[in-house]
Amino acid sequence: MKICFTASSGGHLEEIKCLFPVAEGCDSFLITEKSGDVKTVCTDNTYYLRQTNRREPLFFIHCLRILRQVSKILKKEKPDYVISTGALITYLVCIVAKMRKIKIIYIETFARVDRPSLTGRFMYPIADLFLVQWEELKKVFPDAVYVGGVF
Image (cartoon, rainbow, N blue to C red; front, side):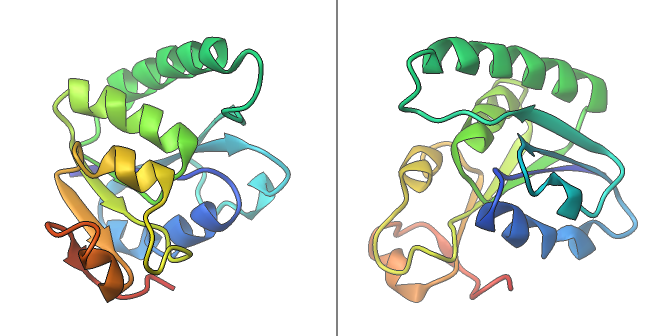
């Protein structure tokens, strides 16, 4: 079994790093953003994508480039699962994964207690397994599975 972990930088990356032990004994890799905290990543098999902000003037062009990069990565790596904690770039990873029929596990960020994140709202319809870290979010995402905090 092969697992693709994906998270944007910052807190999302810290959350995904807590999940690396689930891949013990499996082949895995990480897709994240190129940013100031990349030195904190704990895996040798890491792909870095351009950090993108949805308010940038060239946002859609950057997204198209990222989609092309992600398509090449997933074609090369052939994961069975994508595990994501958000945010923006991970949605693009999951869109490509869905088109390739790769199973998607999404974990709504710990920072969202009773209101969904934008990424969570986008991921809910496409995730094969949608996990929440706060029971209150089950009201927003009724089909989600409450798992408690990943930290």
